[in-house]
Length: 78
Image (cartoon, rainbow, N blue to C red; front, top):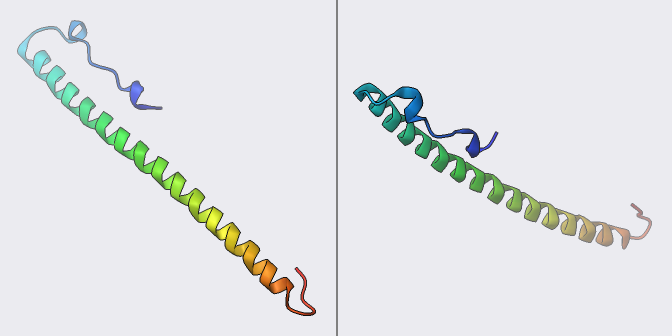
């Protein structure tokens, strides 16, 4: 479920009396905060995935270098 799942509250559903107007304002404020935080979290996850990929590439390179070095030791095979 993404940010689009949090839709705006409908004034027609709540009416125009003061409590309804206040409820709409509160809902809108909470919705905006939710969307801001969702965007922030989504960005953090994307950055984390990129960094994890970089770590794995580096690990793979070091592993290959280590295997190449180890294979040069007489009598050793991987």
